Length: 90
Image (cartoon, rainbow, N blue to C red):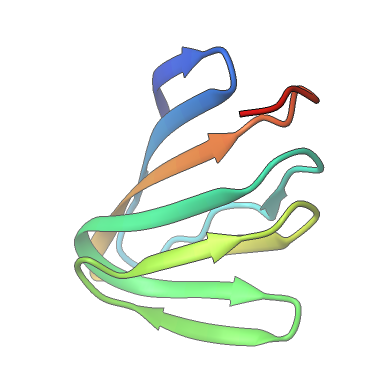
């Protein structure tokens, strides 16, 4: 994981998952997140099942969602943007 931006209410990270590897379970309690597949393919595992990820896939995650990523045959590169709920209004 590489943190690209961590400013105010937004954190942007890049996650690279090697072929056949998986991240640990991830999640956060505050704010919402979205994942965007920038390269490769793989799978998103949620407590209720798995979903295939292909280039340009987008996944929206609510606060409290738990998930992990698995790299496909060529690996998986994902941008993850997280809005940290600071209790302010937009």
